[in-house]
Length: 83
Image 1 (cartoon, one colour):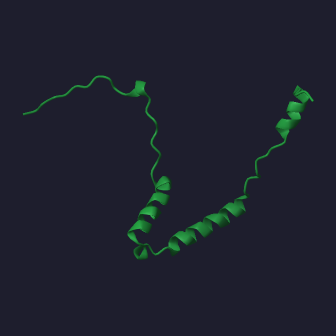
Image 2: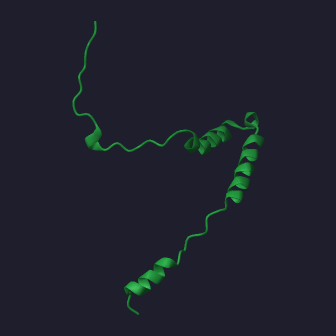
Image 3: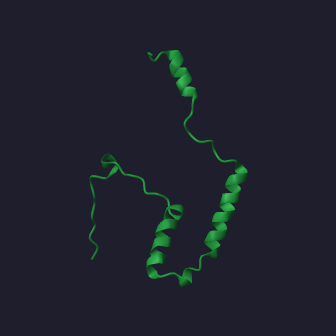
């Protein structure tokens, strides 16, 4: 069966993506996550667990670095020596 504009339209209308979560479900998941984070006793964790915890939460705390293209880097520098 050839792929025509009509069959393409039908194929495009069928989404394989899951439905998005409702606002209520998102709110409940947020509450569960907040309660779990509050329940963690950081002082009782081993050093290894503390590092893993920090590694897990860092992407949510710090912004991601943007990639700098080669043409954005300065090519000339001026160095001033002060005595």
